[in-house]
Length: 238
Image 1: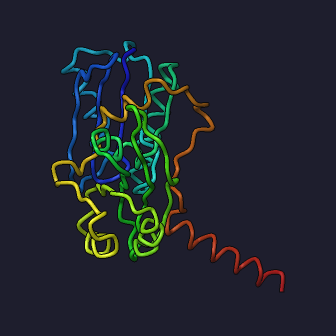
Image 2 (image 1 turned 135 degrees about the horizontal axis):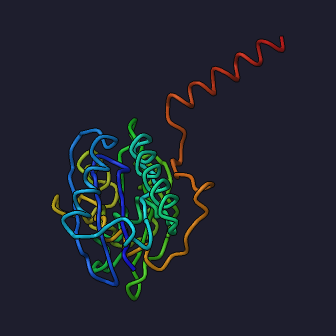
């Protein structure tokens, strides 16, 4: 089974080709550049370099969020289009789970991947590896980093934090958890698209037309529009 994995859910652009436990090729950049321009050329170049044609693919696996609203949408749109065109299964995996799995396989404790969500908030969840299987301890969520600490303190367990936005929040995390807070090195901050492929390998395909990203929250512009529209409707009713 040849799998194409796509992750554009944050600044990191990741594409991988994976087959039966072997990483055929992998492309990763961490740049503030438009994924809508770079994602398809990256996929095409990787497939060309690996001598794989679209008809050779058996499954598409995509990081479905949370993360950047635009970034998540781009990756999911590309994945749905490819899966529909090639008539092959589409699988979505949490972007946070991918990041946790990229570093947690050899860590004895919990893993908390995180993306900055501004205003002191983070997208995060809590994961743990057991016999090479990843388990969800706390579901992906949007939460203030200070509130997240309050949830983690009672666990009294070592927790490994990972993500490119870790430096923004690490002081709060280390002060709140003390010796229980473990921080990854910068070389481990990027989620691995090959891990994304591995996670999606055994998972069942999803209905392509109804497949939707997991934004966790609405984009700010959309939320503001809905709020304003609701106010207007109340005014119209008098």
